[in-house]
Length: 251
Image (cartoon, rainbow, N blue to C red):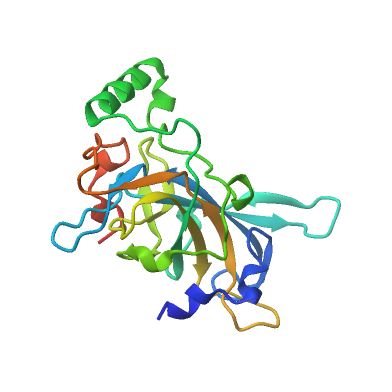
């Protein structure tokens, strides 16, 4: 049912990151702006092989935040974040596209042992409130990356490129809405980024039957290695220690 969304009509793209006046759906009558944050970025993976397929590691996780625009069009216009507890997740869907990028100078990855030691040292130097959020970040826009958006490589992605939103309590016990891409693999080697886009399948705007793209975000850069060059899996992150990727995804 999602194939049509991968084509992205321009009427869908024009709403990305903007306040949207909803005429139907769970937010009918309200003006809502959506925002994505990269909650956990992929670092590396092994080139897809049918006999021994391994997803990118760690699994990509994106957080959705929603803001209601109050007193729109007045001098008192403002945004108020809608608590995750108040948001109905049915119909909230995210999709990934894949793009090749040039690696930044000196980009490299630690061995699993070195990474575990680095994370331990980082946790010891952080306050308790900081320790659980080391994987979180804002992600990047396409303007910050050398991305040719016409050269999309999503056909090289294997796995569930569409996922539904889930509500979980994060490492600090805060209720958040996440999109968990638990089983993505890549069929070619190189340096890549994902582009995340989200939709509410039940929302519509005036004058259009298309489902608007409400927000988008580019991931941090990750590397896909050949089988021979793959350095091995990394230590579990704070987020994945909370449960397996499929458990986080609500599967």
